[in-house]
Image (cartoon, rainbow, N blue to C red; front, side, top):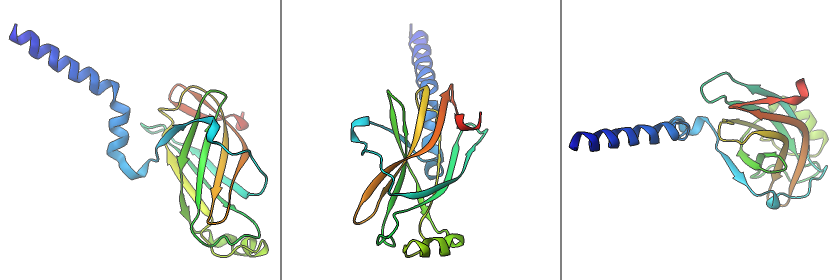
Length: 174
């Protein structure tokens, strides 16, 4: 009887570890992978065209997390845009939405472009690496959310991404 209890306990622990293995692995890598937080569609702003932006590249990696890297830049022209800002990505389908944090980085090579639009500073780039493993199956539009000290705005990037299995792929490339 005691052996059966130990066996059931060990088996239960193994099954739980297996069920939550993606969560455990994502916790172990820590800061190198951004979390994808599911959010309500109702919190999203109405998209605008005030943001100038570019998605320089979307890299879909063939690693254990099926990680996706997004690199780009964003500005609000003719605004005091040299202070603290937030740029987040949103994956939005009819049923689900996910918010993905980015890190702000310098884009020195775009200095003259920023100056043409009366934007100070070089901290206008962003980069994010995230795992789509926990994102539900479906077709998603990629939105960019921009917020600084004085304003915030959301824009549709025009990119469509398809989640199938554990992979996320760019539909625009098909």
